[in-house]
Amino acid sequence: MLAGEEHSAPTGLRLSRCSAFYKHAAPTALNAVAALAILVIGSCCLSSCASVSQHQFSEPASGWQTKTGQLMYRTAKATLIGEAIVRLSKTGDFELTVSKGPGITLLSLRQDAEFAEFNASFTGQRWSGSTANAPQQLRGWLGLRDQFLRAPNQKTLRYVSGSETFLFRF
Image (cartoon, rainbow, N blue to C red; front, side, top):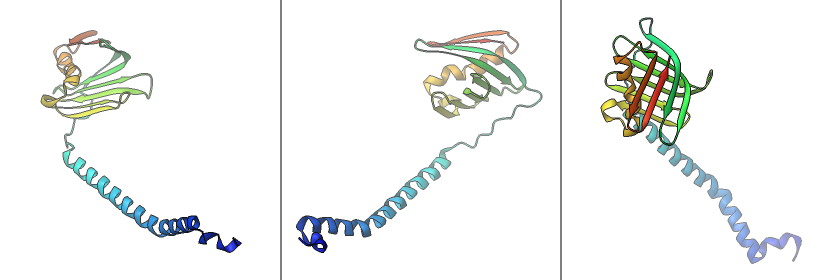
């Protein structure tokens, strides 16, 4: 076999043909895949925008009561202890932030009479929607607002919801 004739062997021909095919087809296939991916992502973004609520929570203002302390949250399988900030407005707006030291937010909850937004960054759980349609696993957390509205000035608040226990100390 001569040095310039290595591509004339049957194996070499297959490789040469494959190389030629991928040289011309790969960019086209990649462009089609990229276009499809962009179309799918764009569709998801547009449909997600349509289903995201435009609910606006009240922002904490000077009339809001703010309490800082600790929360111990306990279930049969887990215990969470963290610093808690609770904010209540005179109109019943409620905010809870649980953190582990400065800048490490574990959980945040915003809630008014009909709507809630829950974000547990340490587990990646997020939910927002009408409190009437809340998932079962959030019912205990969403019951906290009513507990604080009933007893806004307590130094200790203990609330049990099913297998969950919430203990706040301010």
